[in-house]
Amino acid sequence: MKKAILIMVICLLLIPIGCSAVNNAAEEAKPLSAEDFVINYNGFEFDDTYPINDLVNTSGISKGDLENNSGLVSEGPKNGYKRWRLSYPESDKPQLRLVIMGYGLSPSEGDCIASAALSDIATSRGIKAGDPSDKVISAYGKPDDKVKGEAVPLQYVYVFGSKRLVLDIDKSGKVVGITYDYNIKKSFQDQGFNE
Image (tube, rainbow, N blue to C red; front, side, top):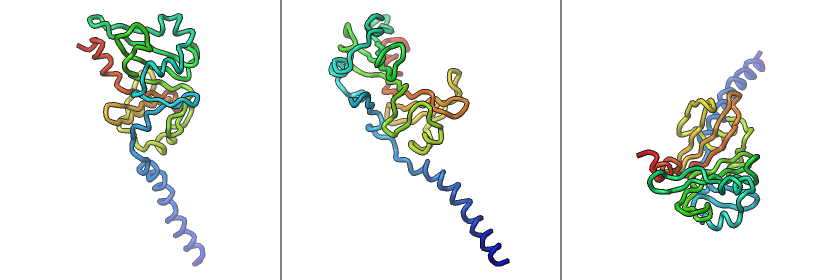
């Protein structure tokens, strides 16, 4: 009888430990830093501060993007500020999509990366499309914001200064998209679309 009571007491003590271990993992995730916004694509590391000309010269422009006006998406109606979307390795099945902004005639003359979408590349903390949302929480902690949307049921948003890491979560709780938002809102304003 004493053994049975002892076993029950031990079991009751272990249950809260298991639950708190999951919560502690989310609370112990280190805060975002500039390093969390570095992209590693085929052994080449860059972020929004990397010189655009060097980035385009190193990575090139895919055939599909070249055929589509070098990836030009829009131009500010009043100021001519341009937005290019470059896809790597190709535009039909990209692993990485960059939005580059600038006044130049080509993306290599751009002055900033506004955003980067990862399709088949892991974040600096090892999260990639297909991972369960609890793995995201373990790696990044609780999101700064959760946004319900139409395109995807839920987005986890992590904020570091003006930068945001946005993870799209589907109905089954899996990551289906990852976007580094280096300052996409400012890029719309710079084009004159939000005046």
